[in-house]
Amino acid sequence: MNEPVSNFGGFRVCQNSRISKFGEPEVLKVQEVEAPQPERGEVRVQVKATSVNRADVMQRLGKYPAPSDCPQDIPGLEFAGVVDAIGDGAGDWKKGDRVFGLCGGGAYAEYVVVHGRTIAPIPANLSFSEAAAIPEVFITAYDALVSQMRLVPGDNVLISAVGSGVGTAAVQIVKALGARSIGTSRTQEKLDQAKELGMDDGILVGDGKFSEQVLKLTGGRGVDLVLELTGGAYVEEDIDCLAAQGRLIVVGLVAGAKANVNLGKVLSSRLEIKGTTLRRRPLEEKIQVTNVFAKQVLPLFEKGLLKPIIAETFKLENAAEAHHFMQADKNFGKVILTL
Image (cartoon, rainbow, N blue to C red; front, side, top):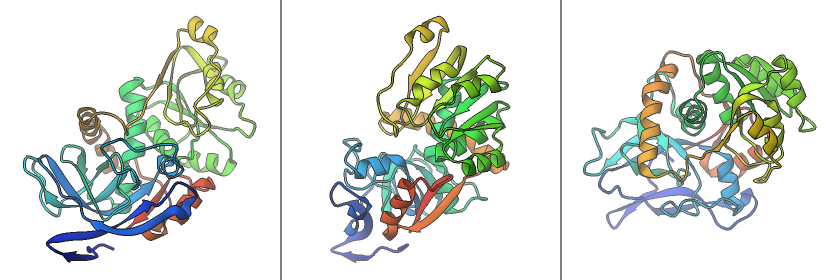
């Protein structure tokens, strides 16, 4: 699927995987559409690989609509490929440049159009599949841990769902920056895999309780920072894990959007609680996080200090199978779709 399906009437036709209706993974259907055209400041990328994120699953179920300026029926938040067409004022990109980046949706397709300042060059040592495993999880983790919550060397950091894409990225970032990580997972296998990535301590959370173990691991002090990737009732446990003036940032809501918060602990310990998402940020903020990523994170991949973690790879036409794989919680790291 690297070549366009056909050309007619002067228009290029391409394939994508769209949500035909809300429901189970089988609602993802391959269709032919006219390839999008770049406008001023934009580039069109011929997608070689994309990935499956939890947001895609939620969108397919009708629980997480795409931003209004993005396709509502084509999932996909990140991509890797080659520049195919360039609009006026889109920067110094050239046709054939290997690039990767984020988008608000639409990456389950042969072509995606994005702003020229929201993509970055793929390091020479990375394949398209490896590059597609990076943007959403590493930008999310770095932005949350470092840019927003001020991670510094020596911090104790609790990472929930450590086997997830963002979790595996966070473990590596914490290690690279000289901090200590404690990860949680519902399976021992994922904890063992996370330790191979550099996680210092792991906690099995079959019953959803982990605060007592975190306090024991930190000598009763608690952690400086929590990266919460599931939400729901885990937030209550997170607060009990935090040291005085600790920071909690919530990135995911797979376990639910509501939690009981002990405001007494928040006040007495002077805690900071924050939520974040990349998808709905305005363009200028997306440009800013892309610039930070290119300057501060990409060099760590080039030096081998960070690496993308891929659990499984599927063809785009098998996106339904990939969604089943993710929903079964089988993945340690990213699920990739290739074209």
